Amino acid sequence: MSKNIRRREFLTWVAAALAGRKVVAKTASAERVVDAGPTSDYSSDGVYARFRDQGFFVIRKGKELLALSSLCTHRKCKLSSEPDRSFYCKCHGSAFDPNGKVTEGPAQRDLPILTTVTNEKGHLLVRVPIT
Image (cartoon, rainbow, N blue to C red; front, side, top):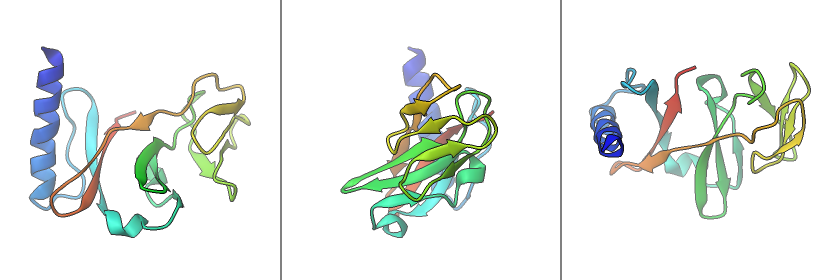
């Protein structure tokens, strides 16, 4: 039953985002929805880091468009995207491959893939946990 509440809550926030808000306030489950702009902004394969400070990278792989957390799973430091599309944590040296899998510790957990949806205006909406 809580899944339905969360889904309903998410759809409520999506509706608010459609009303022209860029970042929607907190939900009861400590998440927010970020409007990452038109999906056409991400037409080429690669890592898009413009939302790094808001907690995620947008990644285009062929037809797949996804959002990957930009926070290291070790101590929540902000990651940098590398030219080979991997990710590196300057705080303690953890590294992640282009899919978010840990390749070097101390991090032990892979980077989470965040929930995304494309609205009817063609904008990518990303559900980001509040840290």
